[in-house]
Length: 337
Ligand SMILES: [Zn+2]
Image (cartoon, rainbow, N blue to C red; front, side, top):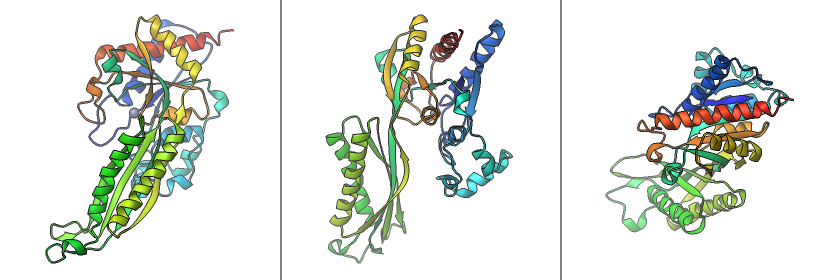
């Protein structure tokens, strides 16, 4: 049985995202070893690399499950040079990553303890979150093409301002989700204007848009609606727009039996539980494709994450680790005979 998470982080990230699950997994193994218990199956602690996508995203977990292809390493989102440099630092090469595939028959389950990274557990004053699934996500790079020109001499009615279209799209995308897609989210995370100067009308605007949902049908519908909004924003200002898909992750339900088992483990420790979905991606979504996988959430103070203020109380960390231990022991027990 695999227990673990990831140790990589995002730029200017916090100390708990990923790391808690790896440290807790290690302590589960140490506790079992110290107790002298002989379990009918092997517990393994694992740290997956590059979960966050500084290089590729889910690089370690998709290597293990065999989903990683050499093709996907050709133009990784962090750039090919950064990937090759990172591999070299680790003493690896691309071919070896593909060889990291593990035979699913050698795994009975994967359990990942993680901070919630949102406010729901704290709001409900509940100690343990039983994760039902991980949202799917779609991301696109939109390129609005207008016409650069002199910011002083070009009349307002003679402009093809790519920056304006990007702004119109950003507002429209937000209104669309709030109005028509409850339970979904969409975010414009980056806008780059070219040439980018006080006195030049933007000739092009590159917009990073992503949307997420736990359910496939609304996710597909939202994706189409966002692309329609992009074309409408472009048409409004007589521009062209191209959409390049950047990432695509389908919603991933997690294992219901494992979730029930984790719930029993937490209740046995006297902890309150609630079910919730994960709005963030996790290694468990890669593992779920080949082995029953589950996630345990503990509260994040103020719901803050991907920020140095990220914090989970010591009691929260201990509750999570104890739940992980108890769930691992109970699952091992079911293999006893
Ligand atoms: Zn994480």
